[in-house]
Image (cartoon, rainbow, N blue to C red):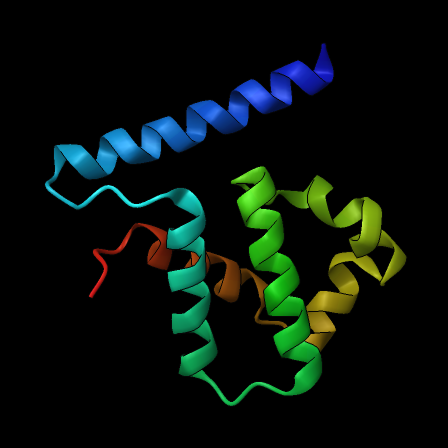
Length: 112
């Protein structure tokens, strides 16, 4: 049941995003494409080191899979094995929350 609920939640979140965009006149883009566009903008915004770029890619992959990254995301799987949120906060100089907020904003910005 948990697997089914998570999948339904992901589908619902993606549909809501599409409806939201359509209602204000944006072109409908696949969610995965929106994530890639957001990732490109974030990569261009700073001079990231190799470790940071690798983590940005992982975050984008997780966003594609889960839609929303919450505190539990960083307590499981590869995130947990690699040091969790504490490690990411260190890698991004305590700016992880800002980076995640930028991802969210850029996901729904109108594409250039």
